[in-house]
Image 1 (cartoon, rainbow, N blue to C red):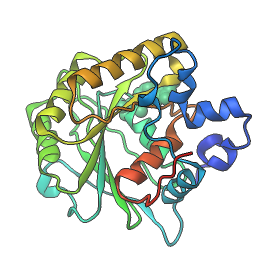
Image 2 (image 1 turned 30 degrees about the vertical axis):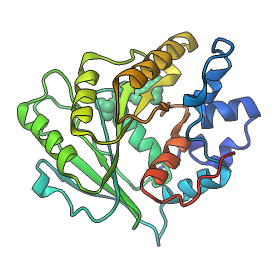
Image 3 (image 1 turned 45 degrees about the vertical axis):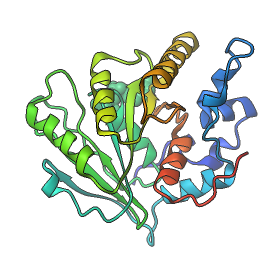
Image 4 (image 1 turned 120 degrees about the horizontal axis):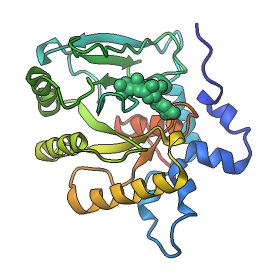
Length: 265
Ligand code: GDP
């Protein structure tokens, strides 16, 4: 199989010097030092697992013979979805936001898992289900955009409203451009359905520190003032540099009930 990227495993990240290590594992925390003195940083550290929890999560995302990680099936309608047997998380976002890259990064320690992309316009958009051993399922939802056909909107809405085992929705937002009109449509939908979600800022390696900080603060403020269901801490990721990927694995493990003890560090 393919060799996983260098920083896909925590053991490699731990060998970096401290400041780089923090930047990879806790990218949001790394921004804290550039805030104005006295700024409220509680929203930067709500989910702050220690090493043991990060390692436990990594083990979940590492496949082996007794712990298979598989693409299960695709569905265009809810009655094609696999039975809701395990706790589930889903990933949604605009086309091109970096969703397939992120899911590939999350599953990089299971190189046999194939994350398919269907980007050709007019190509049927599907929900792709991945099963992580006997622990949880992860769903790659079709990317949305201005020209999302009505049946696609209905499929996503039906999934979000009906899926009983859905524990958390991960809404991906481009970290370089921030919240866009279509992202607001997704937020409105999640708020209307009253289901818990969390925002993930992607491609942070592409944003300058200033742009990233501005987007983080703006989105934090938006979440605080305008949402009920959104987790107050943002997650920052780069699928290229692997920043935030380990923490996101840990959060997925946590929300699916697979992290019995998240000790504060
Ligand atoms: P999707 O349509 O949401 O699945 O987006 P993709 O994962 O296919 O990514 C869209 C484009 O952004 C591709 O050209 C990726 O190489 C690029 N991309 C995705 N994630 C990152 C990232 O973390 N950093 C950088 N620099 N580019 C990224």
